[in-house]
Image (cartoon, rainbow, N blue to C red; front, side):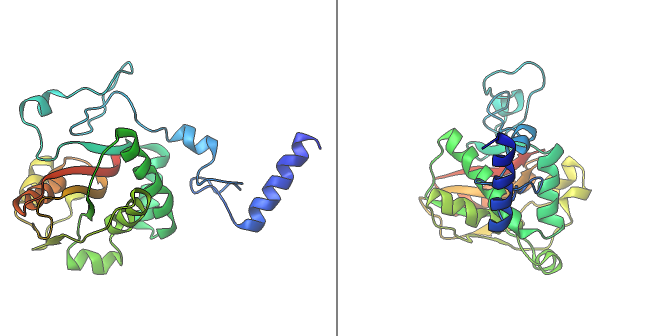
Length: 234
């Protein structure tokens, strides 16, 4: 049978089965993303700081500690992320987070689990970054919890809502770096993580202010280690 016919038959079978690429909607015979979308959203395996995830520009090179982390490292030990917050990955995250396309949690969670596997990280429990009551009521779901459930399934780990938000805060996206740091100081509390290695899950790492506040709360509650897992590094 000519290759063109094979492709048409494959497309027809994919449509009948309802399997489509989560990035562009093209029919798929298997997987979650087509090859074209994987090319547009490559996994970041080089040229980043393994501690904070800052992506370096210029020629590709191995993961290297950045100057800031070399002198004043964050409280978490490392960060796993799929790629930079740009292009199609940014679009997927915005569709998931702001348009309520919860079905995208599957592919985004898979990408995050792949990033964790790439870095060979080990944890005892997966903990999502919590939302305040007002923000949760407005959005209707916590994107970090949705991602944490998928990641935990891939890693065969329990999900634990060990963090709570103790007070409402302004939206981080509207604030400067310094304002973000002040905004979330003391805004989280943790329990039930004594002597555990924690994978802290969120959708995006920007300035690291929220991750810092959550990590400090987890360590204060006795966590042995905290590392971050985010889909994208801004």
